[in-house]
Length: 409
Image 1: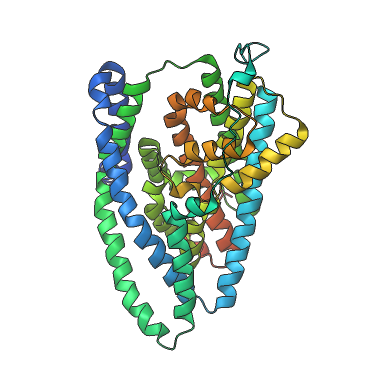
Image 2: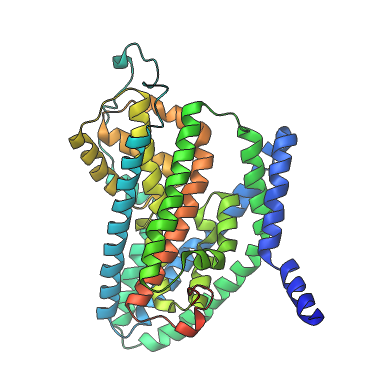
């Protein structure tokens, strides 16, 4: 018994999760007792996320290219791509609908029976600017650009006679990038500490009642979505949501500290491969999901939009709510590739709707940091579930490697 206990203890103290947890707890205490000092720690979190972002384009490019070229044929690539996009659209639309429904029922934007005491609603701007500039949106979204370029490159290489030689040359480059990233990930506790310390030191616990209600509503909705909707999806494919979450706990903690799902993208891909998903499926589905499968962002966008309508006493008809759902189905795509994605896409959505005062965005600034954590965590969990589902449906899943996420019998 003693050697086993020592081995477990050694593993515990040498695990990255332990140090990330300690960093988060320390950051919370620093932010609460010494907020002036904690706010100055912001560069640590920003610095870590920026380093990780340097790895995102090459990792997306290499994994997608090797994923496409490593498959038996382009027919399979197309089948996985179509299947993934169909899954993304169904699940994100469902998450948008849940957000609108619960925000309408709970009414977090109401103070008593009304919203803000607005004497003359016409004083507020229902944005009359131009519609969302999709060209500019694409040009500012590096994730979408790299994704498209990688897909085209992978298809071209698959058609070449020198395909096998190119694959052999790409493999060591891919291994090198991931090896460098592994060393960078040892800095995760530093990044998590900086991000959490700044958040607690800057905003404290003081928020307005409607904002507090919105936060609680969003977090509860995302929890219900994860444990019920995603849980049922995994259960259908013979897996357990709790064991899946336990398997990616390190990635969740990194996202919690940095408020960025991008910070955990590379390590999530490695975890999914260890769980049993084939490398080609992981290489295609995860990067694509970071642009098209943003469950957390979708819930937040729909709830925040209805919240602002309630706050400014804007009565929305059923038709207008359906219009909002349709607009959000478009504006929510590709949000992960934009810095401060949730807030930026919400602004774009309000601009397109031209019905809800854009001044309401100022109310959300104070809690956007907290909301970004909820969005990012839900996004990364949802993308992992999507990859497991696609791998299972494609029979690209190695059962012996999935003990950590299989339900107990």
